[in-house]
Image 1: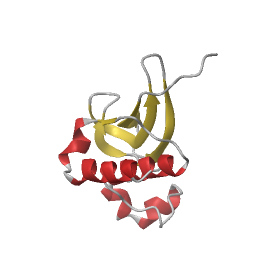
Image 2: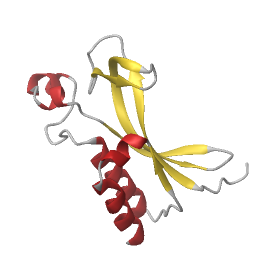
Image 3: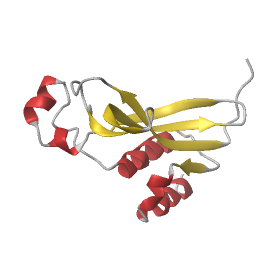
Image 4: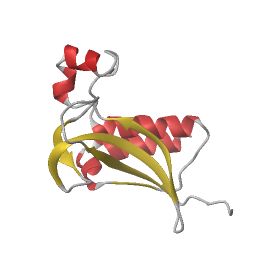
Length: 132
C-alpha cells in the first residue's frame, strides 16, 4: 500500500444522528449528516487529506449547553464534570495543538466556514503552526 503524503489538514464537524435525545452529547442541533436540525451528537474532527485519500487524526465531542447545565444527565451518560462545554473553534485549536505536539506539521489547514466567523481562530492557528 503506498504511503499517502498529506497535503492539508481539514477541520470540520461530524454529526451522528440519533432518534432519541439519550446518550452523551445528544441534543437537538444542526446535524450536517441530515442537512437539518435534529437529535444528534456532534464532534469536531481533524483529518489529514491528499488528492487520493483522507484519514482522521483526532476528534473531540462537542458538549452542548444543555448538557453543561444538567449534572444528572451528564452523570447518567458518563460525561465527567471536568469535560465542560467549549466552543467548536476552541476544540479545533486543541486538536491542532495536540497534533503539532506529536511532531506533525501541516502544510495548509482548511476549515468549515463557520470556524472563520471567529476572528481569533485563524490568528491562533498561525501561532500554533509557526511555533511548531
